[in-house]
Length: 251
Picture 1 (cartoon, one colour):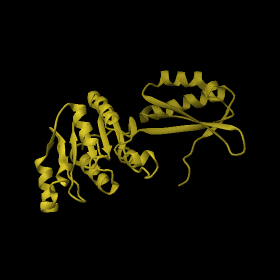
Picture 2 (cartoon, rainbow, N blue to C red):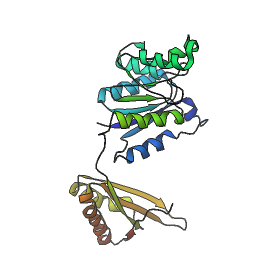
Picture 3 (cartoon, rainbow, N blue to C red):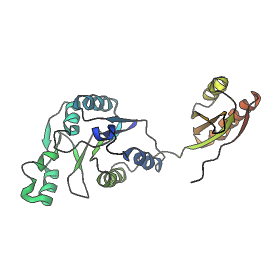
Picture 4 (tube, rainbow, N blue to C red):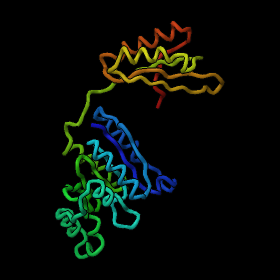
């Protein structure tokens, strides 16, 4: 099952607001030994959003979505999720009760629109203002405000997906000097064939004083990482290029 993230809003794409959701989701998943398979940014466009959700529902993905669940004309997430599933929007009684407890008569006639969710949804309690998010078919929809969304995400993972974890993935790399990626391509292909449980990466960059370097490595199954890296190092050396172990930058 793939894991995806969806960050919604014209304000993100225009630069009016900085997105903090993606790095937060990456870090939150990493603590469970998990990683995102994809992430998408989309503006306030109901048609495009509906198409994206229709595809992720059809694949059976896990998806976390941030933004667009309000009731203003530029909020389309609830409607798009319902359209993608071919179900109506209905007022969720638990979410209505939360609104009434928080706002009383002020929940009507407009705030209550925020708790009209695709039929069959369950609510995600909002600890900040009691305006719930919702979830359906392993898709979880959170507000755009990090102060609300991130505690809601933590609660969902702890209570609904306690077993959604993976074995830790290990990563090791070397730094190769003076080589182009094309010169190392046969070695990389051979490495991928020999170690199918690992994921190879090649990150070229230019050095400040001139010249180039490639961060070349593998990540994945701890039992194979050392052998996979040794294969790369031996191949680089046989090709006549200088290399040294990669060390993470100081924080």
